[in-house]
Image 1 (cartoon, rainbow, N blue to C red):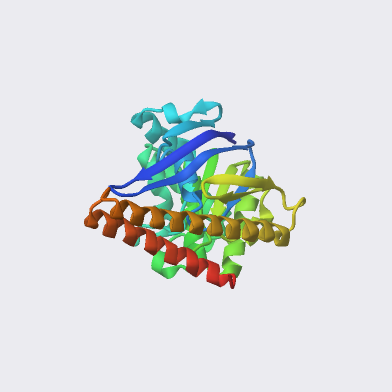
Image 2: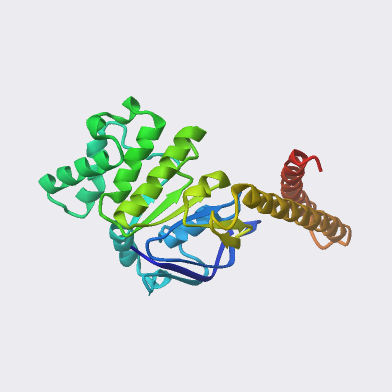
Length: 298
């Protein structure tokens, strides 16, 4: 089991013309052995947060303590070792090697850390049995359903016995019923194996199986609660109200930016090329915001 504490984490992505703040002084704590679901819409920073906790990416500021070690201070070699031994990743896309069988796919992370073949095969069999695929260990990915492929991916994540499992939209490619089965499997594995699991999802209804639920918006955790304290309907209301408020706020900011851009051009502060480039970017984003608002009949 692992504990995770994020303190004032900031992550900014920069391109030539655009700066995107993905995480805004985000703070949260996950207890040892907890199953935490982080829910929020696309673009709220969920995947960025998971990537930072998993040392796939590094924040620009703040600390991330995993078992009281600040992983933001790790060298590249230490990050690789951390990812191999302490963290198991489950992604939206199953990432299975298509020409290998289920059991061979599960063996791969164990090969990377030098586990002997006999020991690898024994553990891979046990894990595939644990996720309900005992009879399909020699099937290749194309012979498995989407839900079965995700079960193989979960077994892969468990292969090196990590103390922390990070699941990024693991139900995103599955139908609703299969998705719920996968989330129940996470809950069962969390209880049986005493793993700390952090799962992010855009579908808040999947959070019913978690110990605690965090709602994420615009790079911040805006609320943390439990299924016992708030129903899914109440969480959806929080989610929707906050989403609308943020969309309206962003729309106003964009309109002000467009107005200032036009004023700067008329004042000779920027060139026509600069005006066109930035104006196009702002208008495209504004159209997306207005499209989202129309879904709420606003």
